[in-house]
Length: 469
Image 1 (spheres, rainbow, N blue to C red):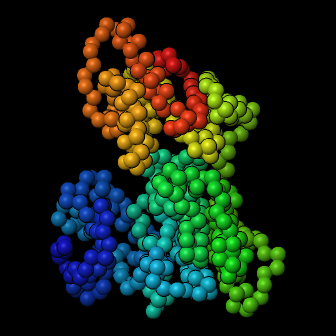
Image 2: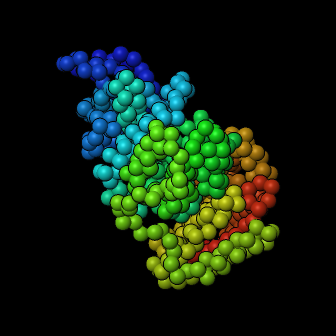
Image 3: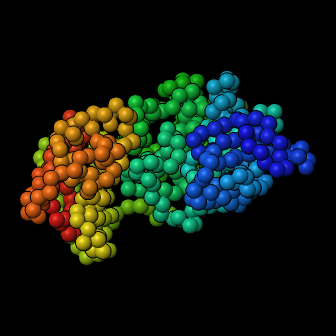
């Protein structure tokens, strides 16, 4: 339990490996407060900066549907955010303990959407919309959105890129573009997808997607269409089901384009349910109005080139090895073209890795190869320990006593196969030949059909790296 001058700490209500949340009172007026504190004894400057940024985001947004921040205070080696306490529970907890009618859930959905309207009004993307981040006081009927720890300002990050290895947000609710696997930027419409998943769970009592591990859930978000809500629960009207299914469209352009458009349709549904009238020719999004000008994230003038890449990938899927060279002047769009095959690869449960042969790094041996395989190893590190143990055995069998040659090039691989013994020094020519042979063994393990890929497609952007493979 922490000690904070001017405040009485009553009890702990939430804790994870990064933060701890308390309920307390402000001594000056006995006002109930929530205190969010970094649960790290010696936080880094970035961790402190992230908490400060979260407070600034909260302080920028005004509205009855947003939890209000009171202060950012120094506490021990860290900071604490002091915010209002509406004496409510998260929607996630309420779903576990309380049975709500469809009408009550619909009213709740309207209030949750209204909170999102207030967030987007300030050009903020929440990026972690899920049932745990909505607080509801049933007595006062207040609903407020919380936790702006990974939120971003749209005006400052018009073309955000998701982290492929560790995507921000709660995995079960993140949008396809938020996974970082489909070459699409993140904008405010990512929140609509997450809201759709939240409403699907609220009305059906279950998530639309389930998987044994993180990679399976990511695949579902990108490639699988969930069972319509009205088929999961026949009591749910089709017009309500259609709204939710539109929200969780894979493409951002096919979702609602404004939170106010979502709210209008939900209010219309409520009136229909209240009056007992059936919806006739209801089209979700008919009253939706685009509030922001968004240029579609689409590659123009590269249809034939994209076909060549996809054809090569499909050939590789059939068991062939394929090599494609993409050339052109700097800035002509080579990387954008190559990124077009991210989605086809992901749909086949493959892995897209890339490395760039930067002219400024031309003196660094295997720089492009190093980048690509470092990314692959980081993807593997997100798998369960049982999978990592299997990978370790396969890699050790393939590399033998030459593992150190590979960990020198791909340092993160050491986290899988452990510290490797020193190898015997050879003359430059023999050393080069040995590295190439060992790297080929590594590639054979990684592209074996039963393990990772049903194919192996290599595309080199610009300059060929100095490795014969």
